[in-house]
Structure formats: structure tokens, C-alpha cells
Image (cartoon, rainbow over all chains, first blue to last red; front, side, top):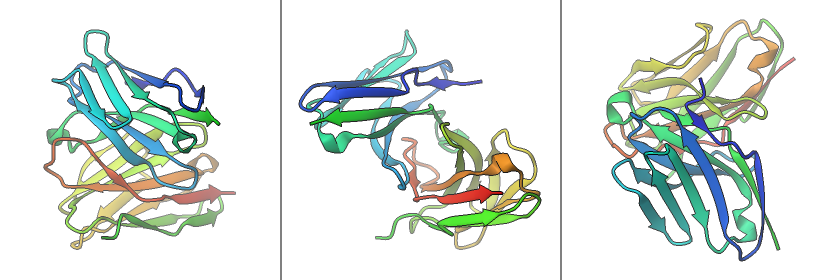
Length: 114
Length: 114
């Protein structure tokens, strides 16, 4: 049962433009949502998160939007840079009582062309 | 400050053998998580250890097991290896009571089963 889905396996964007990565989830009990970035031969690194009680969180070029009624979140990267090319994983957490166990999507490969 | 470290980086085994993977968490972190990333798939939750005890496990057979030592480092053991166990095994650590769900990942151990 895929509780977190990233339906776009890949995305290609021109440098300087906006990248929008999407994620859908099915479990309304998720408490936190996170985005991780992964380069080849490295472990995933935390990028940005959002609590289920918020609808937007911004950190520099990265903004995450949460639409709870649609069970949908998105990551916006503006402006996109070639160094942003990586695999992006959406993840959801049920909270500390579940040990902050993260449920991951399958990932979206982002390619930023210069 | 050292991040999460994993060893070995690469491991090659044959079917039926046993594999042991090791993980040292970030200093001060008491929770350790193991994830499997098979080729083309997202991260699948394997095991969660906290304060030396197994707190939760994912949908994996019992031949996947592990433990956490008093210094919070952890071992993942995979018995009776099968070809489909070939994957990148990622270890992550966190403060057990934080409610943001942020995990810090190591670079992974690549297991190849021939």
C-alpha cells in the first residue's frame, strides 16, 4: 500500500525557471511532511519540512505547500539551478509516538538544464 | 561533528549467505533507522531502534534483523540472502523525541547478492 506517491518519475527544467515537484498521500494521520534531496552515491539530505497544521513553509529558494483537503503537497524551487539536479523524495511522518518513522515516495529525478 | 557513518560501503555475497551491515549514529542521537532502497524504488522502512530496543519494523521477513548497542550504534543482519536483497541499505539517526520527523542519513551500504 503506497501511502505516499510521487507520480512524476522525472522532471526537466531550464535554469532560472521554477521547478514544481508534487506528492500525494493517503493517510490523514500524517503529522509532518518532508522533502529530501539525494545525489548519486550519497545518502538523502533533509531539505525542508512542513507541519500538518500549516499550509506553507519557505526557506530561501525552496517553498513547500500543503493542501490537506486534497492530501497533496508540492515543492517549489525558484529559481532552479543546475546544482539542484538530484532525486527528490517526499516523505511523511506519523509523529514522535511512532518514532518519527518516515514513509517515502518513490522519488522524482529533477534535471535542471543550463 | 561527524555524521552518520556506515560500513562497509560495498558488500558482495552469494545466495544463502549472511550479510552484516553497521551504522554509527550522530553523537547524541538515540534512535537508529534502517531503510532499503532497491533499484528504481523509493526508500522502504526496515527497522527502528531506540534506546537499545526494536520499536518497529517494516514489512520484511524475519531474516532481516538487527540490534542496537549501548553506544547506540546498530547492526543490520540479513540471513539466507536472496537475489532480490540486492539494494542500497541506508541508516539514519535522530533524537527520539523530536517531533519534526527529520532523519539524518548515512551514505549507505551497497549490498550485491550473486
